[in-house]
Image (tube, rainbow, N blue to C red; front, side, top):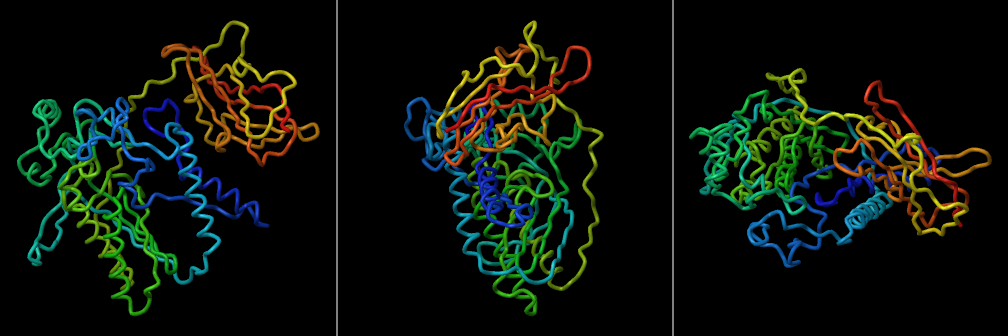
Length: 473
């Protein structure tokens, strides 16, 4: 889903995960024991917008080097396979992942065997010394830097462009935005040289008020489950950055293990693990300063630092040694501030209750599979209660005298759309749209909306409402 969309949709991985879980559980006797996970790996430069990037005003391809349209990043968007329908693009991408996962599941033949082990440590990535090879092959000691965001970070990506006159591929910066930056924090000479060629927009690693703007102390972790080795990284690695890290760790495990790790080991990355520290690119990708390079916090040698430190963890695992942790990340829970305004209050017209139907299904309706049923309810702000253990939307089926939940807002066929008639109105509406699946059982159904309302005075109260019943043939 593009950021230009007004709606938030389940991502492709979430759709694929729910589909495969439903598929496997329906074919297993002990179906509740199966769990699937579509986890983020080294996808930092991967996009589901596979049709390319185009200008939304001219429909011509965007500038290749800077992802701009006539100099503006705001007009350059990627197109998914279902363009111009963002929901359809998300469905297609999710279904492709689902079909591949089913193929891998059905063809799996290797059993996980062996010991379970792990190594974990914290490191200060703002000042790590790293040994790298020079262009002539000799060793050189470099270091990482305090965190900083480059100008191209503010340009966003073609999955979600930024604003103003920022652009990707910017290794020079802009005099006006440098002046604005200096009002917050002027980076010192050493920091500028350390982060080069990144032009610093936000010197986040040296900004400490009201608390640290970026982490310095990060966790890294290796988990072993038999011949499966998971590298837990606290960021979004690009494709090539992840490949280099995997290869480096695999070489250490195989070469130093005395047979404990065979050549059949599988090394994978688990991204965005334990905490979050933006992106990690290769040294070469960093030089170009697109969005990912500008968002690589700790300078051009960030990946080399990860490789060096993960090799140490791998060596400790091979040699069955403990890994000392001499530092801990600061606990800043007490310092957190929130800038999102709270919900003022919710209201309905006189004589109307929350959950009452504003626009109902027609009486005595019959629907064919593949068609869409919708109803609109008087609602309240979803932020009053996110219903993480419940649901805002249900499709219920009549079973004898009981209504049984069949689909909820986790299912792709059911959409929950919340809106206000105006930005500051206390009134709001929830529309439930159910596109009847082809495999839905015939019978009598209804739509149910649940939520929570906040009065001007008093406590939050939960409500529910249902549409008229209708038949599916």
